[in-house]
Image (tube, rainbow, N blue to C red; front, side, top):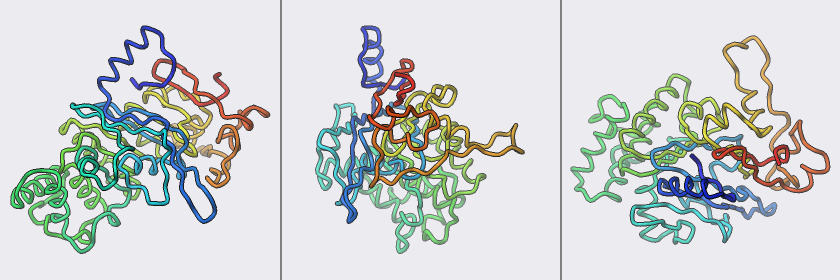
Length: 348
């Protein structure tokens, strides 16, 4: 069950206490603004969610929704032009207690331990993430030596073992090859090997299957499910594809223009969608029973972050908008059930 920042009665407070003991990462009111030559760009606007131990949280939305910026904020990989709001909070929960990531210096020892150690990330395009001048093995070993107390020989053995675990044939040979010698699917597997070599508690996967064909995509998803159970870790899975999210996530956040439009369990969001944006996204997915019919696209385009609309950010494309309401003031968050909330005037 996801935990929401809303008023609770005594029973709900008991449920929230049980959930809080299972929290791994808690993001509260995260806001990120970029300084650009054209002006200030609000990329993430007060989003909150919780990732729980042993669970996969899916973050879904169109390009430009702020999904990757949210992930980069957690890893503190934002460029110098980015500013995180002072009242934003990103808390990572170790057994020894919570660590407030937003208060850490990017270059501090504790942040280096967290980044790549406790929290690892798979990037969208592995070819641009790997250095072309070092072998795959050297790059895996670098992560291992940075975060684990082992010798170089032990690091090499771990690297070969990780390549084997992610399904790369002849790992003892591949470990000495360069990224350009591997196919796209193999590079993505190697990227997963790098991320998991440090035994992280949380893996952030930013569109890890976008550039792959459907067969390799299915293999990567199956691989990640198996490794999640084997390593007993949590995953934040970022994608624009609700079909992929349905296969991997137990909890879902639907983002649009930096806002969380709907949050809940996968059963809530996919089986009982409430926000018009979520309904539109689901309606745009092709279905086996209607292969001859036309798809129903989400009308219009996502606005530029430089020209954010007033009120609900989705009102410019919403077929159910209430004139004089949705386009004036932003809606509040409405609880649909104990595990399901929606950011929409239709349910207030």
